[in-house]
Length: 363
Image 1 (cartoon, rainbow, N blue to C red):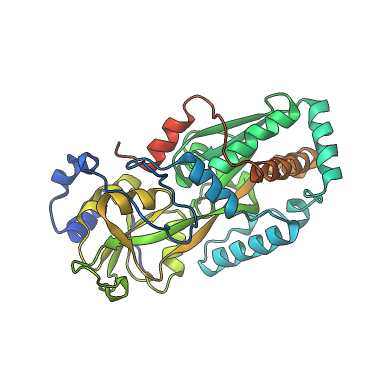
Image 2 (tube, rainbow, N blue to C red):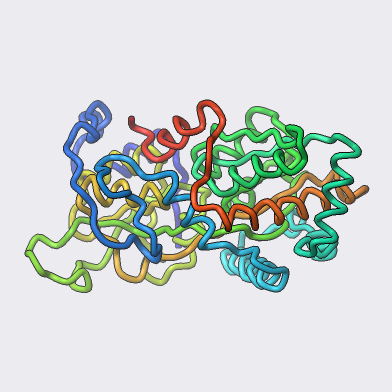
């Protein structure tokens, strides 16, 4: 499969082909001024409706929090190891795996982070040394954000310094490659760190998956009422955000293996309004739920999948791994505490605004 590089020229050509109309008018039009219909039913494989009763235009943070926890990949060491192996197999199948950016399994699982004794010792170690950690995550990672805040409560001082202003994984990676930021840990969608070739990223390494998010291709609903989505016209072209998990899945998917066209994040939202039979956009949750409800789109059968978001660490900890092991043990403890809490509790100032912006970049 050949994917053309995304340049201003090819970008214009993509949308000329994709929408069959001039893009200049689209870029000045705001589809969010249209009324938003009330949702119904379960979204993708999620058992939690992301739109709470009575809401018509906002995804519930509480529902997203519960969905993240329900899809946990770290309920035990064995489950985390199995999930890690599957992610690495997918990277290898897609021919983007960079072994230099994968932590050795003896480092990734250097202690029994799920053992209460290890968690207790880790808590004492971090309290005694008073260390702080810079952690990078995207704002939709609500449960992970809550776990970091719970770690601060356990430690009784603000050891975790999370940066959450990012909307999705590629923005997180570009904070390193374009802005020169350095992080102790990242909670990151699996793919951006492997698609990007910058040597700056060689200082980071994959550890293990934390949770999953649903992703899928969306297209226009059948015109005739009662028509099954199984009778949709085969997808001939799908807009995909480049160098993301969507791009990775497009390489691996039998349904989409020859149809991907690289696009900017905001353009996927703009083009979702103008889909025609045989054309689709690929998007992750909760933004897919937003687009589905806003434009009455449907999921293309066979394209729904679960994408992992994982822990990455800076390689500086390889020489002296004690602090990294303590961080991971305490994160597991905090994550388990979140599993017992129905609501995520208060967030830092500005967090909810970043979450809404990630959900809808045109607003």
